[in-house]
Amino acid sequence: MKRTRRLRTSEALRRLVQETKVDVSDLVYPLFVIEGENIRQPIDAMPGIFQYSIDRIVEEIDRVLEAGISAVLLFGIPKKKDEQGSEAYNDDGITQRAIRAIKKKAPGLLIIADVCLCEYTSHGHCGLVCEHTILNDETLVLLAKMAVSLAQAGADIIAPSDMMDGRVAYIRERLDEAGYYNTPIMAYSAKFASAYYGPFREAADSKPAFGDRKTYQMDVANGTEAIRECMDDVEEGADIIMLKPALAYLDVLKEASMRCDYPLAVYNVSGEYAMVKAAAQNGWIDEKKIVMENMIAMKRAGAKIIITYHAIDVAGWLKEIQ
Ligand code: PBG
Ligand code: ZN
Image (cartoon, rainbow, N blue to C red; front, side, top):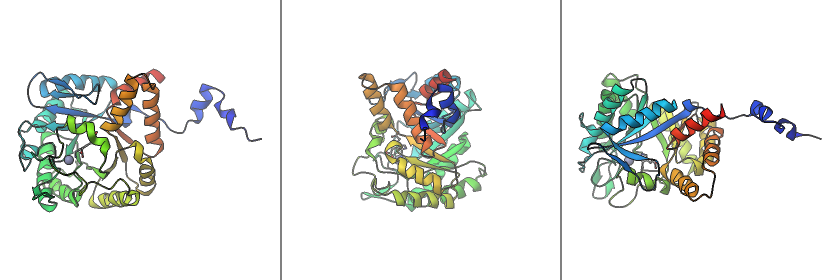
C-alpha cells in the first residue's frame, strides 16, 4: 500500500517535507498618507489600517521595522484634487514629502511608490478624462512625470497601477532619461476591474465620480489576456510583474508563474482583507490560521512577493513559529 500518511506523522516530519514557506522578506505593507498634522484616521472597512499624516506615519514605520518587513507600498492622498491630478507630479506633493520623511527615518526600508492619478484627480479616474472617455496617450505623459518626481524624492521602486497601454515602456524611457536607470518598475500588469477594491477607495478617496474602470482595468473573466498583459509588460521593460486581486485569481497567478520568468508579486487587496477581518471579528473564523493559509496559498500558486495589509501580523506570527 502507498502510505502517504507516513510523512505526516509528526510536526518535525511535516516541516521537513513542507513545500511552501512564507518568509518575512516576501511581505510588502501598504501605507496611506494624508495631508495635515497628528492624524491617524481609521478606515471603516479595514480594521487596523489607518490614514496617517506625515508626522504620524513615522510611528507606523517603527512597527514595520520592528516586524522585520523590508518594503512598503506608499499611497498619497492630496487635499487638493483637480482634473489633471496635478498634485501627483508636484515635487512638493504629499507623496513626495512622505517619501522624504520615511527615507530620513528609515534609509534602508524599500519604498515602492504607486503611480496612478486616481487619488489625485477630482473625477477619481486613473487617467485624463475627455467627455467621459479616459485618454491613454495623454495620460502617459503625466504618469511619467509622476514617476520621475517620485524617484527624485527617493522612491526605490516605481509601481504603475493605472492600466494605460504602453505605460511601462513610456515610464521606463523617462526614468532613464532622468538618470534613474537603476530604479526598477513593478508593474500592476494584470489588474482586474474588481469589486474587491471597494474598501481601498475609501482609504485612498479615489472612487470614480462617474462610470467604472472597465475601459482600462481587465475583464475578470479573462485569464489568457492576463498572461498577455504580463508578457507585454516584461517586453516593455518591467522588472517585477504584479497581479491583483489575489485569492479569486490564483489560477492566473499560477499560469503567470509558469509562463513569465520574472519576479512575481501578488496584491492581497482591501476587499480580501475586509472579508477576513469581518469574519474574524465575529468569531466565525480563526484569523491567524486563515491568514497564514491564504499567505501559503498565494506562494504555492507562484507568487514571490505578497503585498498585504496583514503584513505586520503575519511577520509577528512567523516569529512565533520559529
Ligand atoms: C489605484 C489602485 C487601486 C488599488 C491599488 N492601486 C484601486 C483601484 O484601481 O480602484 C487597489 C488596492 C486594494 O484594493 O487594496 N489605481
Ligand atoms: Zn488608479
